[in-house]
Amino acid sequence: MQLNIFTHQNIVNNLNFNSLDLSLCAEILERERERERERERDASQGVN
Image (tube, rainbow, N blue to C red; front, side):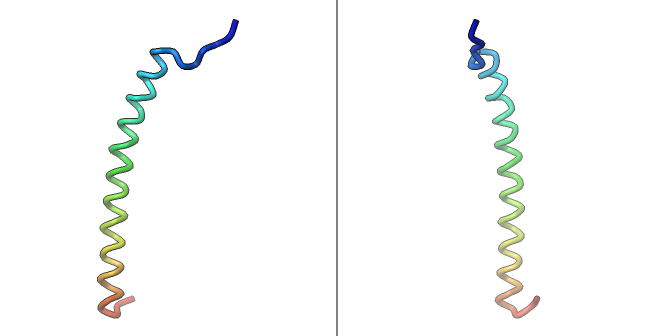
């Protein structure tokens, strides 16, 4: 018997996890962008 990992339940579970991961990634990216902007601001002012 071949095991089909793409069962409906698995797909639904993966979608749920992915949406959580996506919002978390978006949050992390936003923080990184903010830090990058601060670094550029500091660099343009000659602050290290």
